View (cartoon, rainbow, N blue to C red):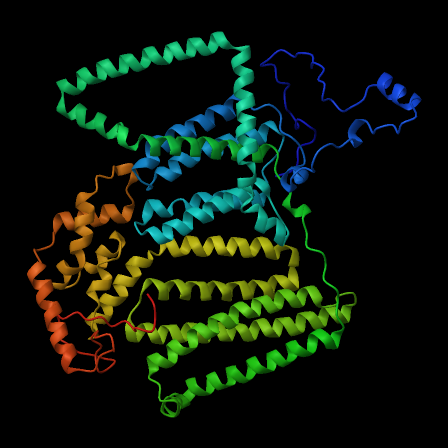
Length: 586
């Protein structure tokens, strides 16, 4: 979006909602008039500053200094959209997320659009990218029942929406712009209140007529709706599905959601009309070092990376068994021991690259070539380290199964590899595009993580391992969300009922309406409705006894949990066991 062309924006009409009134004189007005200034000068005192150079009180906050212009009076369309957002938030979000977030987001986006159009701002390509990405992320709660990818998607959607309103090109602009919406909460609320007060003063008769009309319409709908509902059961069912169930017990929660929707939409509109230019903040450039001073440590680090990668290639090409014999580690222990260190090595490498870019000299062509060569080599070597870390996690998952923690850290490591590729490519071609590209890749990673259904992948991978002859941890799988029902439904009895019993109870006790239900929950309800669980209480208890008895005769952990003796354990088909590593948190 571009900046407005004037104080009130290009194409902004004057506000005629309230008659203009002369500003009364106040005793605390510090701007001296001409007669007062001349009298002060005749008395021999220093003449106080006047006009726009005058400043009184503490300096304004950073957001106020970086806000390029103050928006004109709020328009009726903006106020109406904000009010609709608040009403929908109170009536829908109290029942759950599902498609409700997308429904609530529509009037909020309209409020920001109307405010931006009144201020003369126009849509730009990156603004469209952030806006479309934010709306796409809000589709994750509509598709997945798991709470943890939903939380990541909602937070990322708010960040992208804030970026769409503020814009941002530099690292500081992208970082602060993604959270800059919170700086407009107070200003947006005050802006909206001023608009409402101005319209109330200039059109009391119209507001009174609107309130009377609304009251009459509400009375008619309630009276005749009640009569029709009592006369026809089918119409009563349709009416109950359309009207949200609002009780006095959740009134404080509904009021909070109403306030949140109203304040949030007004903040978005206020930001769209007068964004904060966070790009105006920049870190001071670092003091450039000599070539030898900064390049020699990085060259030594590159050599260390090269030696490590050579050892990894030797292990993968035939020396694996020898390394295992010399270190006295199992395959899984070797994989688990290295993954976390390699993850930290990747993060620290990104930190080293950031520091080197601030300290490296780039005044001459030779300096820039050296920077690109050394840091490019470091990025490429780190990509091999990322591949090694992912390979180690793959070996570990093959042995112990997939969990939420393991799939999460693998996704983070994979995204770090994408960031390194962006640094190599854009660092050589379009360095100024790098901050926005990294932010877009993070949003895309969160969106992909939610769409692939991590809980469903966890259940599917563990069920497949069970079919391949490994043991299965039913106690862990039963704590997954409804997204896992499709895979867990393929287990034989009594494992299937043991895994699905808690999920079925949770769904049965929930009265979530259709608009607050995710696709994963709806599909799980349909599966359990067609093929419910048996009464597995006795069966699950007997399975646990069998596990304890077998664990006493076999090798186990110090905490008493059973672990199969061999990696390819072929235990009985209906005996679950905890195959997680006690040294690896879930």
